[in-house]
Image 1 (cartoon, rainbow, N blue to C red):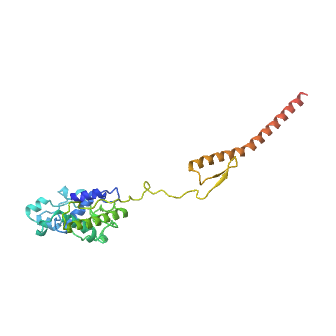
Image 2 (cartoon, rainbow, N blue to C red):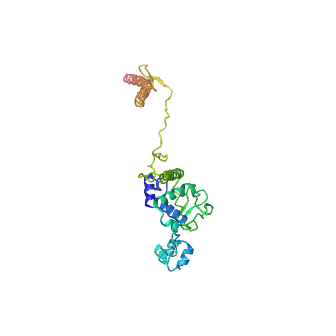
Image 3 (spheres, one colour):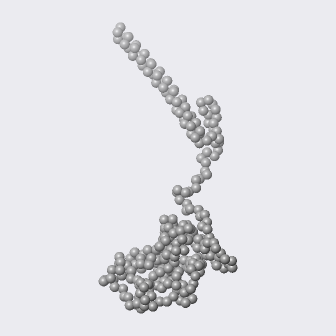
Length: 284
């Protein structure tokens, strides 16, 4: 589990915020893989509970029905004390490097993502996606207590969108290929158990979207200013073009206002002369 957590941390695929799956979801994947190969028992198995003499009591035992969920489970100490389960002899002395390679190989090549979901409550590949309420396109992980048949089903693989699912799939395949070459090599390898994290382009969003190369003025646009000098907009910088366009608009407005102002002055002058003539006639 520590190796998988370190691997997901280096590859930045352990955060639901980054459109991947959380570290808790990765631990569910590790436990499910170890259950499928027989390395761990299913502590929620009804048959194992019956052998241990544990019967779910939802009325008197609070921990058997938390939030109206089936939270009854065995403890590992009880299973080991009563010798209800034993690890297979062929897996007893298995090195951790082979277990790690088996994890990468299981989820990159063997597990049927399209038809089945991960469920550590069942402990095997038997939960079909057709019976689930929430179906993820790439990876469906059933919560061990908030199961699909409960009143609040929780799919731990929901945060992974198409970008995150593709990233997780590529990381699993690269790690499986690298570790297979390391384990099959006859030379002593003192390097890493997984390759260096490659550069992965972030998911396109509003913050990191590429700026468009579209230019508003692709064709040369020319206009004349007051001095009858033609200005080429395409050759000038945006700041210079803005300044010159503002000056030209001001000059146009000024030229438009000058005839109106002179006309008003003439009308006022004529009105003043009429007023003076009236005053002189009244005196006479």
